[in-house]
Length: 326
Image (cartoon, rainbow, N blue to C red; front, top):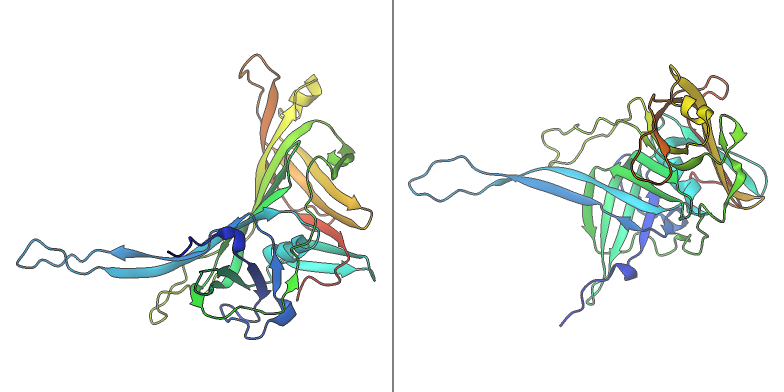
């Protein structure tokens, strides 16, 4: 009896395409082998029942509908692959330095499409699930008081196919990289609200959304998605704030209150990830009583473009890697 396929044996690679939906033929070291928590890419096609009426009570054959090819990549923020993944997700990176390097990543309407390859290790020999034209739709992030720094990239693509050969025999291997966590790598001085260090934020979550047009299906293309263009982005989320003084409550009582969020994970002086959301508007809300424990303020927030730095969202990555674009 054959063994059940195990996710522990799988390998996941990504490589940037030069044209939407066109698989790289010889990716070599341009393919990146990295660690994930999970991925859910599928080329699902629904069925439509036949409405034909015959001379008996039996249904006739259905048809398959267009491919809704999409999925999520969930992983931790890690010291090597995160810059690569966020460049793919947001679209712009500007590196400086001669080693170590500093990469400033922010939203751009420039497109970055990828191949995503996952090995399915059968006993009789592996097959590969390969998603083509993979585009990031959403990028979800956040922090807690005592956990790994986890991120999720929600994505859509042109197609998901089965291949009989490995994507790259010589990928750049990121499977030995370090993971950031909110306890060991987020210092008190590096969590800021309104530009000042704070101990008021218990948890924060946010999602960048490209609001892509994902309904471009055309006749004669076998039900695959023809394109996947970006639209205007949006960024928002929630934050839980400690309630210790009237000033804390007043943060959520403005009309409206505009502030900023900034936090930085550091392994050492040259290896770090810094998030900046420079212009944040907080929703109006009030504290409530849930039980006999501490009271909190749970606020919604939305980001907008800051004229000072010219963006609504910026991630700075310090690493030993010279380029994230190839």
